[in-house]
Image (cartoon, rainbow, N blue to C red):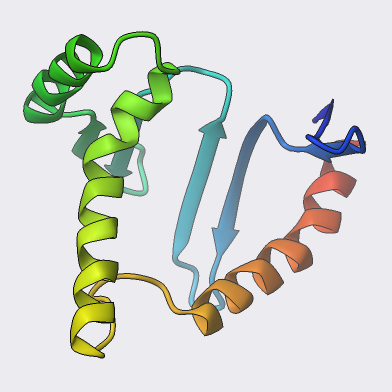
Length: 134
């Protein structure tokens, strides 16, 4: 847990690191581990029940790494995570602009309803996860 002041000066406590496993009623498991202060890369692993790695996803991939280097040269001095997130935000802005121009919905972009449900899950899990830290 980490407590830091927000722009208003009010302090907020949030998880800086997190690791947990969810087991479904049918016995399937998914484990999540995150370190929000651990750098600008991400790794996703899929393992079997014995822990043998089946698939590894890495972000940024080599193509994104080249784009990040290019962005650092074009726009020096920005926070490192801006370079990492730039390709995704570019796609997001294109999809939202297209949806506005056509009156449609933005493909692959969460709706407000999805965002609200996601926050409900987070609000549900937070006290449970905090209890685990005691």
